[in-house]
Length: 251
Image 1 (tube, rainbow, N blue to C red):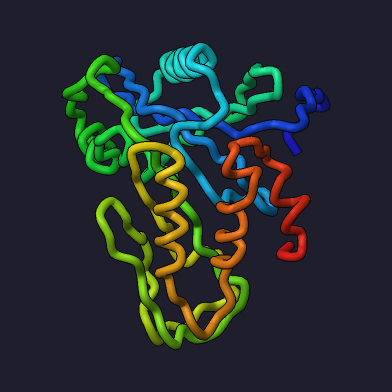
Image 2: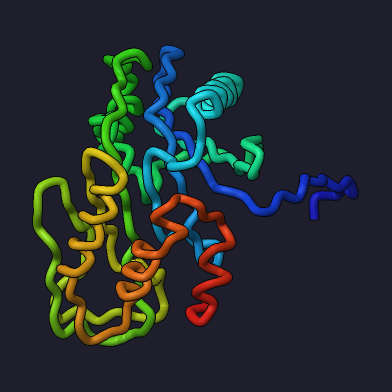
């Protein structure tokens, strides 16, 4: 297809964690890191739960990962919001996977712990405004988790209720009476919580999931309950293959 017979080989890594680093890069050479997200809870190569900070990486690895992400963006002369993604092996070694040159679905958890409105700054950067802060100004605090609420069937939404509490929000366009089609992406919304620490964030997410009511179609809400309360997630000892091995019925 490209009139080039060369083969590019990548090292096979298993098991791995999927860790991504959020950046803001302006037109004036300023690059700011807004922490990392752990996106290792995946099914069918799609992220299901994201959290920040990652429960498994050390401060030493975190700093090296942040530095590598900044150097990659600088080498590319990148401007905008962007995410540098890595695979992390069981020995703490990390490997570059790709860079997402856009705002990502899970940006909300980073906004929660950093206090930075990434959407606002993406617009400002595109208007050639300089960042008004540096790495030293960013104080990452607390823990945030996002669950993707997905449809498992098509049909009409007969009843819909979203949770409402402090530092809990449900990003969605879903409304009662709407028809959910099988022709589009299955994600119905993103449930995001913030708390002082990871244990409290897990409890808060569990309570918030219990408040989500979507009647008329099947969803993954029950599966999310099971995942959150399972030993793998509670201990943080999970990898990208966990859901494939334990929730394959939903493939």
